Image: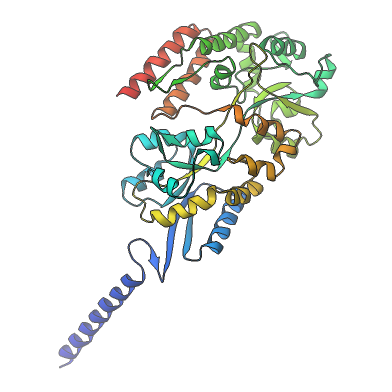
Length: 430
């Protein structure tokens, strides 16, 4: 009798469990919709001020979109080829709906089919290239299709120590415009005893002095859009690398390496300590100077060119993307649209301190009026972006190796860049 009664109780519990499960499945479907509210899964890598900025954007979005909730998750090591967790989530069918993503990675991810094509959604929403800096939109596109909405950007200029300029008789109101003037200023500013630099005027490849920086300043191109091939051995890029190799030989690359290897970062940055007079860098260095050397008397000027004209820069930045397999595309894109709008970028940029990818936002936030930051914003219309290709990281690494080898006399610039071109194009074709 007890056994029969126990069986009845057990059967009743089982029925109740099935009923509750059925009810639950009605409340929350496979897309994360519950009680009329859709949950959008969002991955990002922000901490500190960046996290505050991200939370502010999410709060503003949810207030204006009560039917959508953003489930934000911090995922470390995103960007610059370090997206293993996101890649694994896409492969496993558990991708978030939206991710904060380095634009530099878009080409390789789009090529391997790991991002959703946003073209039609953007067109329906009236979002187009004219909404952003052109280079930012182009960097978020691959093979004629849009895969990301630009959020932030930056640029590169030469920082210089005004007091040291005046000390050696250089006019800080008329900084170098040509490569020759840059060389002359570097020589005057350099103090070297034996093989040791007490102060070095300039190192072309230091800081943000990548080959992209100099190749474009010399008038070269790194990619042919029509053929889809990289052109590292463009004559002007070869000329730029030859200039760097000559500079290394003049000042002895081993002595320069001894100097750079002994330097630190943040408070021990050699520009902050006065051990290097000029260096190529971006607006991201300004907060460090304000924090560690607020009384540093410095300025910035465009990266010199051989002619002293046609000054340019290059820019990177971040975007929001929709990983392949996102379950809430419509709601996810609504969040992306808000984040990339003037309102969303203003909220984010004002807190994090990065430039927005929309010119009007940078103007509204006063970046253009700042004597230093304004110069970085001013040159953005002339900015290049790195080639949007599936082998972007390989290209970057090969160019870096070419600079290392050329400055150390391990091959001529032409030979080295021919090899880079051949290797990357072979990878693109495979």
